[in-house]
Length: 89
Image (cartoon, rainbow, N blue to C red; front, side, top):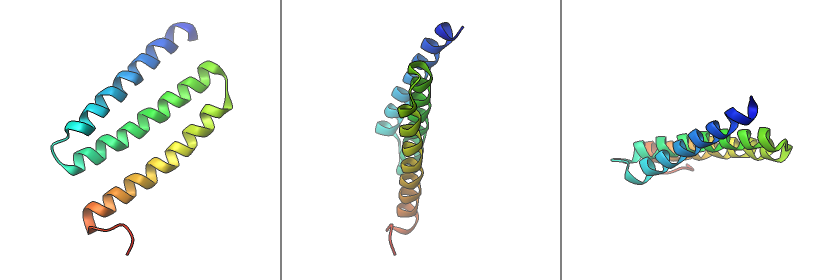
């Protein structure tokens, strides 16, 4: 069953990554681009978790955890920059 579902899930997540990248490049304004970047992080995390399941490797899960932390910090920094004009006060 996993041999059937995994390629379909990987294809859908890859398509979502491409669509988010397109939204990041063509976003009408800056908050939409920040949202597209945040969604790009989430899709990348999902892709790493799926690859970790498929290849049965802990390295993918650890890199997904690091990417989740960096994605959260980057989104918070971008939002703070958009609201206040600077990241560090």
